[in-house]
Amino acid sequence: MKFLQSFKLAFSSILASKARSLLTMLGIIIGVSAVIVIIGLGNGLEIYMRESFESMGSNLITAMVRGRGSSRNISADDMYELVEDNSEVLAAVTPDVSVSGTVKIGTETSESTSITGVGEDFCRVRNYDMYSGRFIQYIDILRRHKVCVVGPYIANTYFNGNPVGKTLKISGETYTIVGMFDEKADGGENGDDNAIFIPYTNAAKMTFSGRISNYYFSSVSEDTVEAAKAVIEQRLYKAFGNENAYVVISMSEILDMMSTMLNVLVFILAAIAAISLVVGGVGIMNIMLVSVSERTREIGIRKALGAKQRNIMSQFVIEAATTAGIGGVIGIGFGYVLSGIATALILRILEENLAVTPTFGSIMMAFCISVAIGIFFGYLPAKKAARLNPIDALRYE
Image 1 (cartoon, one colour):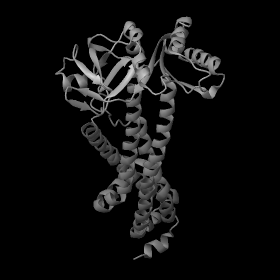
Image 2: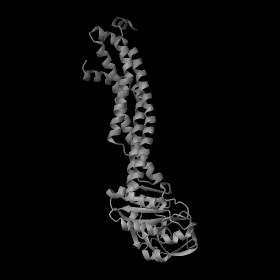
Image 3: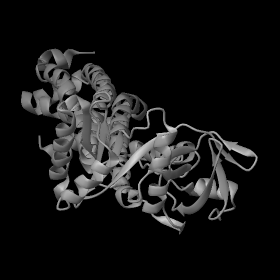
Image 4: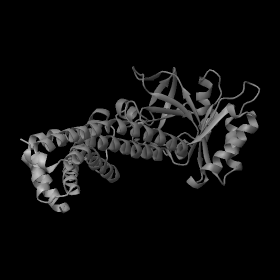
């Protein structure tokens, strides 16, 4: 029996009992759509992470200094000198000092605003753009001027979008706003837009220890990231003599680690979702065994007319594979619909531009697995049908 003829017979058998066939396909449909949505979510998260890291700067390097007590330390001036001496690989540096303080604007107190002390090259290192006014300058840092730069959330909430020249209080000290940076992708009340930047010398004075433990470096280009990281590590090792006294990591390394963890998580979730494909395969095997019993006389007649075992076997295997394949196609369509719904929900609930984007590879993989499961679980019923004795089959009532 030719393949096309077997396929037509399989399709006719499926249409003959539509409700039973649809219920048989249900496990396959759920499994395929779940795998597509999960892999699409993983792909969307990876794209979202890469875009977020690129906005921070792909040539960004972070140095966190733990130190070894008061006897050994490294200053911000040492870091600036390091950049000057290695200008072929390092482009700029900015200290980063987080301050825990209260922000009072007029009669209102902002509880969620972050306060960070930075250097004059912060915008260059962290890819920030100014919207109005100016950023902190070297003279502000040197003389500890009480000036600050605010984010658009603060500007729009408290100053009607025009904060330059206005004042606010940080831990009781009055600061003059000299600039406002442009809106960030992850802005808002709980994002980077709700931030205040002050000279790092002021921020260091406000901390308990007065030390600066975090620095952001930018390399000359993406190609010099590893060389720049090595230069920073060598300088810190020279200062402390112990690799445990500091941590130096690049954005590309962080992205690679997060991508690896995300891929593992997506694989585990996809494997769990694929269990429903196995359940669907069991359903196909069960319905094919029932089909063999119902069509025993038909099998006997075909054998009596000269059909060989391989013809009978291929007919039932193709029928099982067709059932699974149709379920896979429906599952793909359902998966695309769910992906669109998930994207809309993420945008509405989380307010994040994260798209659940199924890949062509994941679609083909899900479809091929569904057909393979149909063939695998259809083999036993097909083998049973092929081995029926034609005389006993013709006598079957």
